[in-house]
Length: 34
Image 1 (cartoon, rainbow, N blue to C red):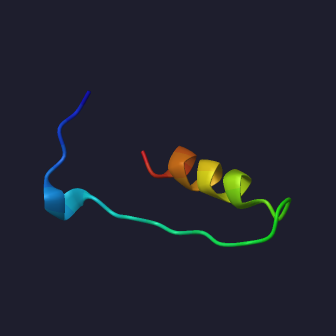
Image 2 (cartoon, rainbow, N blue to C red):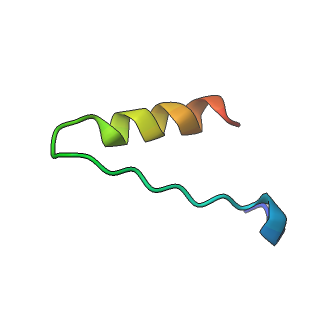
């Protein structure tokens, strides 16, 4: 596993109702950011 410096770490918070697609949006963001 790659080591990350503290200035490379980002915390994200996504709020929404159940079934609003929060997980789908975050998975798509992770897929395109590598």
